[in-house]
Image: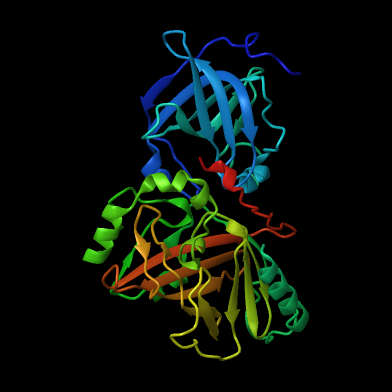
Length: 137
Length: 242
């Protein structure tokens, strides 16, 4: 179902917290250099684009900041060739739907993150790490 | 996979099909996926680590932070290169699909297929579609004028049930994915060993590169066999870059 961004634009909840999280990264660029390995960020918004190609999938969102202003977010996944073994496909995320992304915040960009988990409006979850979705790897 | 790599793989499978290797050597053939959290202490390969080697615990995706070199004593040349390294370039279109060398991709958290013949062993890596050839026919490394490449030049032999691979002729490339790169003179020796039940493949990787670090660096990797699985095309798309 395609939904307009206004219909489902409910705002943004952004939380930053320091948490110890077990991670397994795979990237052409450095994860440790570009992201906070022990940080966590959560953002809720409406998907404006979704790309599922190596070396990283990309989800772009429009969300609201604490002042109610629209903010564009960009989030990357680890390698799609690994994610397809964990249940991800090119159709996993649809433009226009509202999702909540949870992941590791970027060091140099306040509106960029590495995705650890996608939570959909029906409560279902899609994770990027092994052992959560299909446990193939 | 590029055209040359595909042609080389077809040539190899035609002239060195599975079944032509010596019967008394282990068969590494098959699909292997990374075994996260492998128990190093239980691997016999760890006994083969040179006493003077520094064990770098970053294999399988456990990247080290900026300025952390895993205990290695890096040279002034390396420090200068790291100081000049521009991390922003990693998000550009031009960099996005630049593959690493075998030094790095052999310990990256991606699966691989091994096709084993008598005179060659082929490693097909999912990561960046890299294809690596291990010559098992007794040849030596080529001379200094031989081109250096991401895959390098690898020659192998069996020591009992261990495959020992000696590699040279690499181009410069990522060593720790934190701005610390190896030089084109890096020399790598790898030992591969399959567990008794045939389900786990272990690797001890030892590298020397006096241009950028002193002594020897060692890494350990492990994969588990998954019958019926196969690698997927990586088909790197540079449009990720900005």
